[in-house]
Image (cartoon, rainbow over all chains, first blue to last red; front, side, top):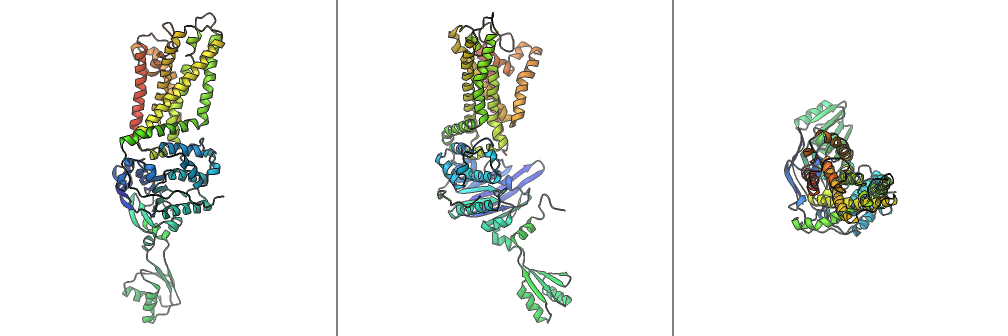
Amino acid sequence: MISVSGLTKQYGDRTAVDDLTLNIAAGRVTGFVGPNGAGKSTTMRMMVGLTRPDAGEVRYDGVRYTDLSSPARMVGAVLDARCMHPGRSARNHLRALAATSCLPSDRVEQVLADVGLDTAADQRAGGFSLGMRQRLALAGALLGDPQILLLDEPSNGLDPDGIRWLRNHLSAFADRGGTVFVSSHLIGELSLFADDLIVVGGGKLLAADTVQGIAARQAVTVVVETPQPAELVRVLTAANIPVDVDGDHLVIRGSTKAAVSELAFEHGIRINELSESSPSLEDSLLDMTSGSAEFSPA
Amino acid sequence: MMTATSTTIPYTTSNPPTLRTRRDDVSAVPGALHSEWIKLSSLRANRAVLALTPMIGGLIAWALASSSTGSDLTASELLIFPLPLVAMLATVTGILMFTSEAQHGTLAATLIARPARWVIVTAKAVMAVTVGLVLGTTAMLSGFAGALLGGVELGDSSAIASRAGWALLYISLAALIGLGVGMIARHSAGAITGLLMWSFVIESLLAPALPDGVVHFLPFSAGYRLLAAGPDFDPPVTIVHELARPQYALIFGGYAVISLAIGTLLLYRRDTN
């Protein structure tokens, strides 16, 4: 398990990460979501010792990253897929990383094959598309056959095929018992394979729950079209059910289609149309983070 | 076309993590050295520097030998004349060993792979010295051959070993200063421009204005003194010899140690992007 406790990072007057405490369960895919400037990348950099926290710490099964005897065998990280020398081939990039981590050089050929770059291994990385760079970066993270993958926006620059490939790859990794902690702004994409979600905004933890739990945090909406709106509003208000009037339609939150229809029947109110909509995960997340977005459309 | 590949990554295990010991770090140094060698040898620019060095060495010594009719310069003295220029190549290579990593973001991957910063610094320092030794040896061999081809006498061959030894120390320390300055600046263009400006312009301008006692302590003025061919040899910047070569070596080496120490301290304290 990864334990983040009291993690704080200040840049001048701005608090990038504010007393963040969370646990990331082993053997699950945990999505890390939040608007731009929420502190996701800073948190991930602190998780691997690249950025020094002002307070707090991160532990992997009780051990700090910088105290791990063989960090590459425990954690594989992709924080920026552009991080490779453009003049160096994919194979040499990985050979250098493997040597630094004291890993056998045959792992290089294995991970090149795993990410489908074996045929481009001797091409210089400067000629790679962003999608190929993402694959190469993932290959670097897999070199030590780690138990945990930390990935910061790994689907950036990937086309739909590439996103599917990544999703399958990460799901397969998790299916084998690996832990995946992945940040992404593609919420819909994340909901396809994440088990849990950690939502941050303004450097603070906003929510940590299963994907279903997060989605269920916003109430179901019932929309009613009735020729007797005033009567139905009175009945709903008397039952302590909040209701908004939108022309001929009443928009009701915090109730269900069955409950509204029951009330209307009991009071002899005619209903022309009754529908119920569940909020999307995206709606729930946007609702949660709306107050903490760094930049918002006018 | 991108397709989902079948995964062949070995199944992960759940062994509890073990704590890093000093022994783990020490045993990681050979791997870090191998990694530095791969990084250095896999770039065209470094191979080009290695190919250019014998040409520079041979050409400079040959041109000086050809135009030195009447002077008493010999091949055993001329062999070190290409060294100041080749030392600049070693310095720039030392700078780029760090700054290219910092600027292309591979420093982050390196430090994620090996969080013990001193292991990385040690490997880079050893590789910088190796670069100095290889470039220096190549330049002197080609300089010796170029001087003989230029028609000068062999000279006192018994002094060659000592002269070459001091010259190799000079170029190795120059490469280490480059690495140290690169670690401090983290920016290729800034570090290269700053160091060349200091070496060729600022120190040259300062030297005539400062007392001799102070000039001896300027880094590259002290470094040049290591190249003295003999008692009557004027090094590239003519200054009265007051200190012995070991003392100049200590001064030049001191700058290398200080720049590396500051660079290492900053590597521990700074955040890495």
